[in-house]
Image (cartoon, protein in one colour):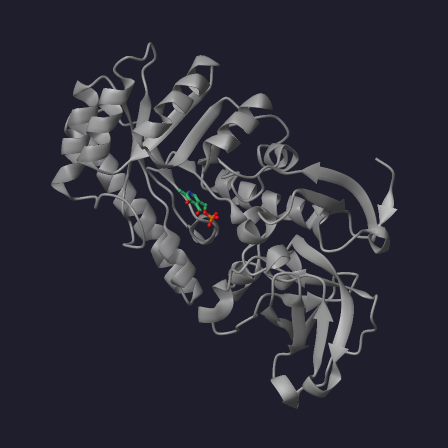
Length: 379
Ligand SMILES: Cc1ncc(COP(=O)(O)O)c(C=O)c1O
């Protein structure tokens, strides 16, 4: 590609600092090596083959996806060991079958007797055995069967009798996003581990092989001190990090690899506002920091070089307009940046902000755009 510098980019544009991303990947991979557990990165944050390859150490490895569109796309790029980590429904069976037929080792998840019966029925006519993980509720935040619930064994029995392979158990400790201290994160990581291992042990005692124990969220993956009994960790947002993760002290603001480049389009000086051409279409409507001790509005402002201006946030967002102001409102000094100048805005939630864009403009610590990586969207 012809090289550009960021001042030549039409805004809003999604920027990715490659060096920061590589550092984030190395940090998690080192942690998992230390804890002697395999890595199955969640590619839903990046939805981009270049990023997935970097997470997998350079060549295709096991991945987690959140859509079958991701499964198709990553299979096209040589990824063949794929966990689809959203509960199974029969209307997706044709798509699963097509992926299995092209040689993808696809594993599905489920957490109810209804879904188990539906999977058995839908897979009966298929020439391939289907692998399933039973989803465990380790923290009450979303889906899953409680580790000591009778349904766990009942679901496994329905699957096994119906010819579906009971590959094991999985969980996602999304409750870690509500933890408010390092100690709470360590406790949550141990809870995620122990409850999921307990579920696997119950399955094994009942005669199922259940070799896989799959856990993962970025905060618990990074705060886990012991992963005995766990066979793989899934994490996604760690690759870019974001303001929610910085608010949890899981990373520093300087670790955030993703930002939205925007241009100042005007001012309302009497209100202390600077208006930019990135609104919620560019940032997403995610307000994940709203419930954290420091509310970052729709994003934290950085200068054009990516240096954070900690007093300034996007206080409000329309579709294509963002309003930048001092976080203390009228008491603060307005940002003195002329029309036409650029700023970068760090996202609350990297997955949601990246999803608003079709490509990453890749930077390597300077204002030169060193690469352009496409990303996919949709289902
Ligand atoms: C099933 C599942 N596994 C893993 C993850 C990764 O979590 P994180 O983005 O915190 O790394 C998610 C995120 O939503 C998920 O839904």
